[in-house]
Picture 1 (tube, chains in turn orange, cyan):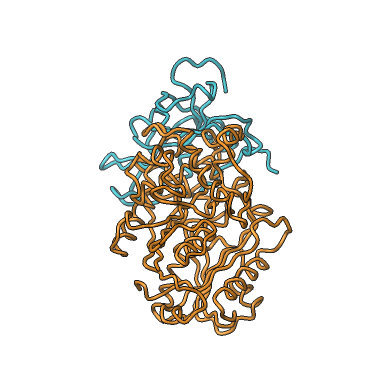
Picture 2: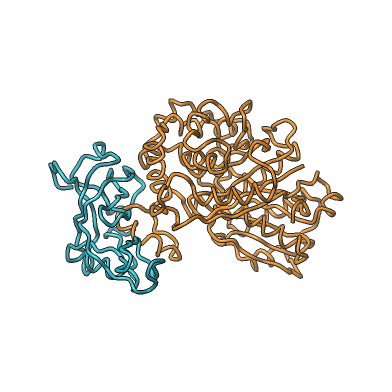
Length: 382
Length: 138
């Protein structure tokens, strides 16, 4: 599969709109934008990929766009952990000849319908995992991330200011991204510290910004991509990882809950598949549902040794002039929470050279999906 | 909005745990041949397959990690409260429960605790209190 496929088009809805729209409507808008970007008609799409938590039925999207002759449609489990794998699955479908042009999409009314931060009871499919947590009042992703974060702080001396550094980094990039929810809205350390406590040690700005939005991208064979409207962005590698004794998302029975075991497994497969190592990456998009999960993912993917992410991030490593510019569109803390599909298209823009916060001379662009649940990651290249 | 205690959705693989807790007993899935414990319970244990048993354990342990929950939270719980992961003595497994009977800002990783139970209908729900120096009921 290696570099035999490419991303040829990307699109998204307005992340900042407060107009209520259906998820289907947003999926259509994002798809049309991706087709326009690629210079193809929607009728060229013959495959569909999303995550299983998406509420837009594949048949509904196909009907809305009048797609005919779909040959491949599939879903990856685990929501925010699965978005990179959805692109990887599309690439496998294309590489194996199952389809020629696969649409990957994620549409989510995260603000007006499914609040990540809400205390609602989870999806009935997950009740087995939550049976031992919900009765104790531990149910939201923020609460679970907080438990994991506190252990990282205990083991490694990670500080609240280091969590803040992750948030401030994302918000710094969002400040100059006109598409971002927090475009033009600065966040200072004082603002961060005044943010209300949500689940100690997590404060308001440690949590991603629930949004109503959709993101889409198109995958084809590398040959077709070279004849396309945009510079092709080759899919260099993708990988998945589950880890041991995995629950959604506590996994408290693992010997050490701070090492993002699913991401470590994913990382090993990813670097092996691409035959490169983390030092070869020019720019990264790391799934940022909560600030501490970024720290642990940076360690798991090998960008920084275990336990050293806090000081590294605090030193400015993820910034515009840092060692590893990260979450350059503002990520989900600053741009929008769309299960990281928006981070995947930012990884594409960085290879094209068209990001509003462009890193110079990007050859290899990394993007990870959510950790804390079974996860996935992608490497894209020029 | 629900305002009653959120209940576990019990299944035949886990029922023994919740029923024992109703009687104030903490039982953990146990392999009689190897002595291994497992929690949360599964239909299968790597050490002994399907032939596992419930074994009562002391219910003492130490706080492995925790969060102090502020809103949004389930409305039945008065915030702030502590939701903790506890390393259980003897069984060597981790269990989630609230820590009560101590001010939330005094809870630390390593705090020694023991299990208590809220009885709700036919089941019990474990929570923890400090092993020593209990000054108030949470």
